[in-house]
View 1 (cartoon, one colour):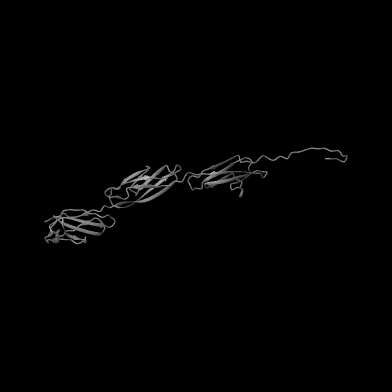
View 2 (cartoon, rainbow, N blue to C red; view 1 turned 90 degrees about the horizontal axis):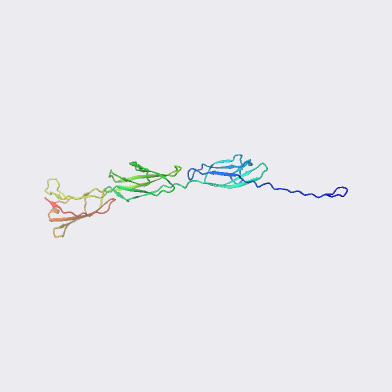
Length: 266
């Protein structure tokens, strides 16, 4: 600097940059259950006068963001001088609860109606079984004896919970199958009195769809055969000195059966 008399003076100054604004503390609260949106993000900084939780796109005067879902949040603050500071945070949650189970035997039958259920759920700590409304259990694995011995399809449901009691439910239909039981009389009286005059096989199946009956004499020779499961046979059977018969048949919803028996005719 020079004045009117030609005198000069030299001096210097330093322009300082303010301290970088940083968020002092950023706290996130996880959601209660996977998929929920009840988490929170909160900023703690005494210099902040405005807050953004979407990387500066929108601003508010609240340091608390509620109803957050799981995910990444970019928090930004602004002070009175207009300076900004940023810091990311993540809202987490518990692992998803997935209920599932397997069972056996498949299928069970009225002769062996106990079914064993094995839990294969993930992300869970406690359980509730509903066995078709007949029984309930809180064990991880369970079993049930269908004592009514009635064939049918029964719904079995498992609800799994995590440490926050977040539930997930899965239901399957389990089957108790009937057992095909043929009935073949071991004696009949074809004397025309209207009582036990005919020889006929029956079964507990709903319908016989395929049938063949072979009758042999005492020397093992085939003497009579029929594919008609519904007609009673009388003297035509007895005249052949039958010793053994072998019916083969299939009923709706069942496997083939081939019981062999010896008759008695009187």
